[in-house]
Length: 151
Image 1: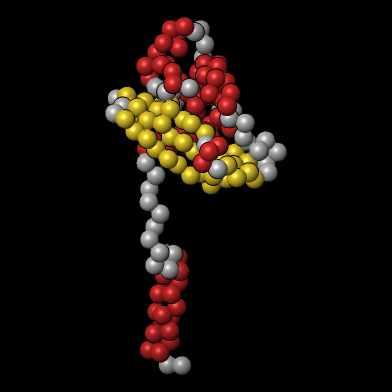
Image 2: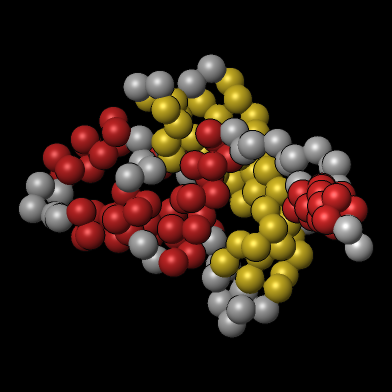
């Protein structure tokens, strides 16, 4: 093969590779909303037992009151306490393929999450919409946070 023909073959191969990597022309999945992202992060922190990560997702107004009631508690302790209340209804060990439904009314939202979850032993479980987990949110200072007053 002559150099110009080889160059053309290489260009075709690279073009096909680029199309394949881009999903064969399929549209990219839409970006998650902030409400979905916060709900998923809260569930993942809860399932990992990561109180400090969960604490960063809790509404600042609620944290202010919680810190006043537990002034000696560090972030790890306060996060663990708040996480315990949140995880009371979260009997799963992980979430693999979440499906979200977001209902927003002003500065409050509820995110229902269902799909493929993992039980505590790591087995896949399909949760239907009727079994969806409910994550209440509140918008404060322009951002969405978990609303622990609405559990």
